[in-house]
Length: 377
Ligand SMILES: Nc1ncnc2c1ncn2[C@@H]1O[C@H](COP(=O)(O)OP(=O)(O)O)[C@@H](O)[C@H]1O
Ligand SMILES: [Mg+2]
Image (cartoon, rainbow, N blue to C red; front, top):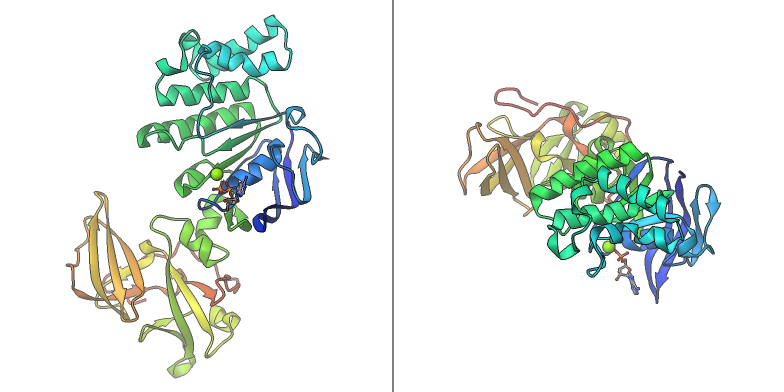
């Protein structure tokens, strides 16, 4: 087993930078999720580790050894793709066995390893079938078995669940986490799905346009996003972002002017953000916005979406900014078109510079209560 590291790794295609000085370590035995929108460079990062691409600058390390010039076949990593890439004319058993034959393992060792891998993934009864005789979920398990049979130093998984329906995706997600924990194999797992990332990753690395935005444990990423991109991308719906200007109101209290309304801002954040006149972006999670007479921000309800256990109320501010409010389904529901007032407790505010970077004021955010009826924030 071994860790994997990117050291200032850059990859260009023509003039375009697909990966921009990526510095990232996947610890020995860790499951690290690389998360970001389509085109942000996730697959490129995996292909650099697999040896299918070479970095233009920087280095890739596996087990502490620079592998830039080591051929793919000599890297001892196994990749699992979105398309299962099974051989249609080979049985399940032969598909799983394939990498062992390629590497010249003897017959007994091949048998033992295929039986082990098949048993681990619940495929023992299916070894004689052809891939076309399997469901999508079973095919994905064959692809996983083919990866683990090699007992590689690291797994590289590129959106392996995208072709599965929602229920199977949830199940397989849990299966992969359990398998990874059982084997303890270093895993770099790529997805654009933040729910997958939040539920699977020991840590998550968020990327945008080839640039690493933040690496942290899932809850830390949610509670303290480093910038507005991460704030929006992690969470569903993502964090509300409100352009604002800082002012010092009566009695020295700090307020942010948001679309003609005022929101109280903690003094530490206001000072760190640059004081009076500073342009900011205020972030607030949908579950931290309250609706009621105690609110201070005027808004109009534009959409009310009932999702069973919860309700998403989309509101629009005077300047056109949208704010999503997440409510319990049992709470009183505003009507479409209704004028409402939104409340946010200062402790629930995330404060960002206009550039998008988080204002580091040392104040913790994330578990503050939702301001309720009558409880003036
Ligand atoms: N072989 C290639 N030739 C040219 N451009 C490429 C190639 N592979 C990837 N790219 C470009 O690099 C960027 C990152 O792609 P990719 O790593 O596939 O992103 P992701 O997997 O996050 O969707 C994209 O802009 C993509 O168009
Ligand atoms: Mg990709």
